[in-house]
Image (cartoon, rainbow, N blue to C red):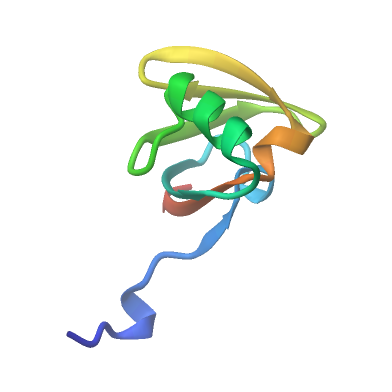
Length: 84
């Protein structure tokens, strides 16, 4: 099935997601232990994340809770923009 590229949502790292925007997790990249810890925190594939604030430390809402992530960890999360 071919998808019209104009219908695809933009993908970016969580660090690039604009403040106030929401994104759906597409993939986790990096070492297995980092990816596993992110999944345990609720950042699993298809989870919806809202970026509340931050640049070097990001405050996000995921699974009904607020979580702070450092930039180094947040760059391992690829999201597709769904609102914002």
